[in-house]
Every structure is written in C-alpha cells, then in structure tokens.
Length: 178
Length: 210
Image 1: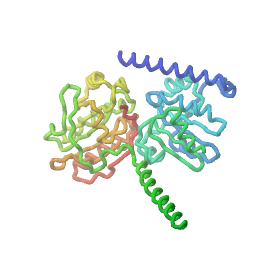
Image 2: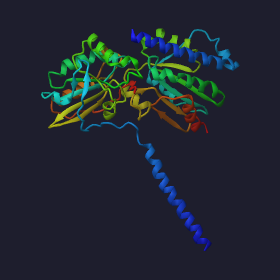
Image 3: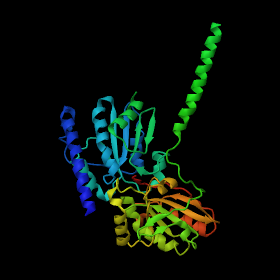
Image 4: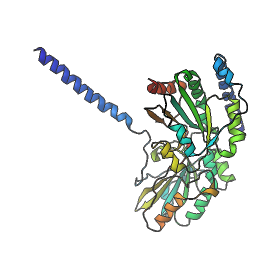
C-alpha cells in the first residue's frame, strides 16, 4: 500500500516535469518534426556493440548516461539530459541514454517510459550480464552504481558516478565544449 | 635595485604557484574510500528485523562473515534474494554466516523503511540477519557504493579482516546463467586454507540512497 502511494506521488511528480519539457519543446520547430516518428524502436546491445558508442571519433561531443527506469535518481536527472540534448544540438552535442533495464522489461517498461516522456535523446538497451568484465572497460573508476555518466570528445573524456541537475551537467559539458 | 625587485616578485610568484598547486592536487582524491582487501573491520551494532541489535562479536563460533549490502526493491538486490538465502544455507554451517545490511535512507528511498524490511524478510524467508544502517555510518565505513555489494570477512585472532569485495557471481540478473560464483569460490578457498585467487570483482548495482 505504502509502495503504491509512493509510486503515485512519484508518477505525479514525473508527470509535471514532462509537461514542462513539452512546453519548452513547443518553441523548437526542429524538434516538433521529430515527434512524428512512428513506433519506438530501441536496440539491444551487448558490450562489444556498445563500445563504439563510447568511443566515437569525430568533431561531436557525446554525453552518455547509464540509467534504468527503476532507478529513482536516474529518472530524476533524465530531464536535465533531455534539455542538454535539445539546447546543445546545434553545438554538436549528442546525448545517449544507455538503459540497464532487464531485457524482459524492454516492451513493458522501457519503451512505454520513452514514449510517455517523449524522450528525444538516443536510447539503447544495454544487455550484457557479465558486469565484472565490462564495468572496468566503461571506466576503471566506476564502482558499478547507477546513475553514471561519461562526457567525451575526440580529445577529452570525463567520468562521473553521481547525479546531475541541468546546471551541474551544463558546467561539466562546457568544460569540454570550450 | 630594479632587478632585485623583479627577482623578488618572481620568487613570490613561483612560490605561490607551488603552494596553490599543492592545494589543488588534493582534490583528485577519490570521495569514497572505505575498506580495502586486508582492512580491519570495526564491529557493528545494528538493529535486526527481529528488533534485536546485532554485532560481529555475537557470533563466537563463526570463522568469518558474508556481509552483503542490499535493500528491498533494487532489481539487482531482488534478483539476488534467493541466492543470498542459498549462500547462508551453504556457508553458515561452515562458519561463514550471511549478514545483510540495508544502507538506504527511507526518506530518500521510501521502499526501504524498517517495517518494509521486516516484511521483505518474512515474505522471502530470510534465514540471516537483515540489519538497518539507520545512521548510514556503516555503509560509509565499508565504502559500499551500491546494492548488492559484498564484503567477505575472516576472523584472524580478535580481528575481522576483509578478504573479498565485489559481486556474488558473474550474472546478477539471472541465477540460472551464472558461470562463475566469485564469492562462493573465495569462501571455499579460505576454507581450504588457500589464498583467494580473485579478491575483487566489480558489481553492477543501485547506488546507495542517503
């Protein structure tokens, strides 16, 4: 019962945030066009397939966030990543949301979440069970807790095992954007 | 005269840079330290779901402890529940009982209250103590960053020493797909009087919420 009430509260809060994001989106015609996309497709990747996304070599900056729909602090910071993705698109900044949802929850939890929140950043499902082998490959300082974030460019890479507000994330992004 | 002044200014400038940079370098220290392999563990005194307080010193017959930081709802913790019961069944009689600790603050993670811990222990038939780190000091002392997060401890004289840190096994999501039982292997090596071959592994988990 307590859990149910908690969930209701949580969903109610989440709802408000989505509304505010949608309002911002309404100002941007570029994003409006993307809304016409049909059914959401989210690719499932193992570490070998994920690795190229963590090591792109071009003139863009990538903000890669490890999260899951059940991770409360992750959900709380998703709007910050979405805002970065929207506001810095023209500066060649790309946000990639790497979900650690269990593969059996792809259809029932992850896709509905992405659709309901109208998430514009690239979302992939990271499905690789042997965490002991890939955690240090993602970053040797990572304890394995989520949320965790990598911001990288061709020449620089920073890793964060922490939560972000939009302002905090923007400061870190700007330190690489220069 | 002028030359001397310039020199003085230069020396002061160089000195201040040296002093300042020594301050800056301390910022790179990692925030979470906690116990490492070989660390001596301070005894705990935490409330169990049966309303009694538990310390390591209560277990006079134990050879050591399997300390697992876990919680009620993190999917990785939930996926590990049956395995934690099985570990207790397998190793308690061999001298290594499981001691589970919930490090989360219910004000941040409302599903992790003491009452809900009691419910969880009852529903899942936990055979081991499930303790509440009410002051959130024990998890910090250990350096536990997530749930589940395992510390294998061995008694050496009157000391408790950390012998293994990390994951239960190589597949937290699916018990049936496990290939390597990191923790069980470590305990079996201790029981055989051998050096543990894999002392640290990385585990994926939910960040501790305080």
